[in-house]
Image (cartoon, rainbow, N blue to C red; front, top):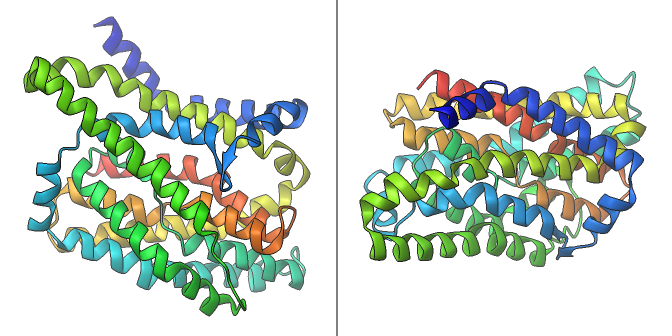
Length: 341
């Protein structure tokens, strides 16, 4: 009872813990820059290993719920996959471009010079053309999404990214010779999907074989649930520590860049949820579909921005703002999804 009360108290004030972790991370990045600098050097193909470890902690409980029998059953309800693919690749990149163009070129032209507006627009498009790969597992678990269905949605999106990301970015921005850092993309897929999924399946089978399905479901699995929230908060501290100096040095432009990114996130979320509900899809399918469309593959977006335009470029700054606003906004959407379920 005491443990349940503590968890309820933690969940009830989750927004407070998120705000505190964001402030702690930003302060650490500003006043203790050597710490995030040292951690930032631990990477593979521009993918942060400390962040990868924390994301593993977040998504491992969900991967434990996946078995290959349930994955085979996903084909019985393919409409959720069709919605995910259509929203992520036929709608999302273009609405992101539209939102960014309206705000950076028109609404904010008194505060953002024309040259910077084009750079921020490029950063926004890089975000819009890369649907989420890792964090969507967390959002799906928090909204009680179908674990197996989420895995298939993410896996198929990863395959589409290989073919569609560069042409879409090149088309929208007219950026000649857009080069996608395939090492970053493949490393992210391996670190955030393949490895934790394989480990989760292995542990599940080992525990079920030794102790049985009931023990696994009732006794073993609940022990890992707190990892999701702990990993999420620790990830927030780390991400904001990496960007601490950026936050303090560009407060106005960060706020302006965030506006179209946040509006795009809400728009895609409500659009996807509306379509899924009109199709009569269950909550367990609708939730991950809405979450994967709303969130972004920020590791890829930041890496592409850095490789094409440089780490200190305004384009890279725009993708970093996408990282900063994503978790608070997505937690809001999680609350909306759960309230309406």
